[in-house]
Length: 172
Image 1 (cartoon, rainbow, N blue to C red):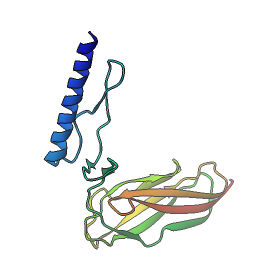
Image 2: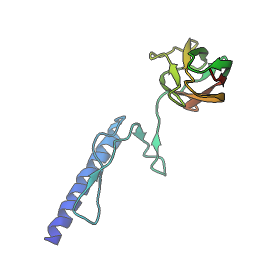
Image 3: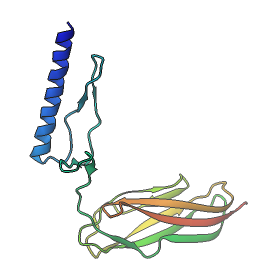
Image 4: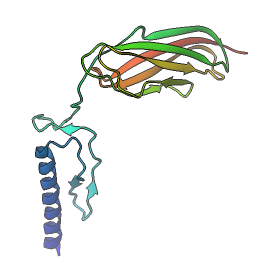
């Protein structure tokens, strides 16, 4: 019985390694075959698929982002609203330009809290093109000096760009 379990585990490992080898040498961009990890018990668990390609030349087994990179330049990276009232709606537009040679693709823009909500272009910005990220800050019942960040994730190097808003929230 023990020999049959060992043979079954070896067969599962062989199939998983074969699938990985086929994926690695076929040039596919994502891993869709599950990777099976052998354990001392009779169960095996599938691994989560990778979002980018595996670089077989990397010595560390790291995942590499192969998307074309570009550069982004904002007119300014920080805005100070000054004094604002609680429960107010405050909007500011950060303008940017794609200063690289590839289309700029903004994957997401996230506020550091629910009070800071960014809106960003969903379609690619061509090289030399410009766009806007509108940030709406609603302080709610916050008080005094506040600093919030918007993290823009795009096909740039570095991948993340931080925008900052500030305000002094006055109690009403």
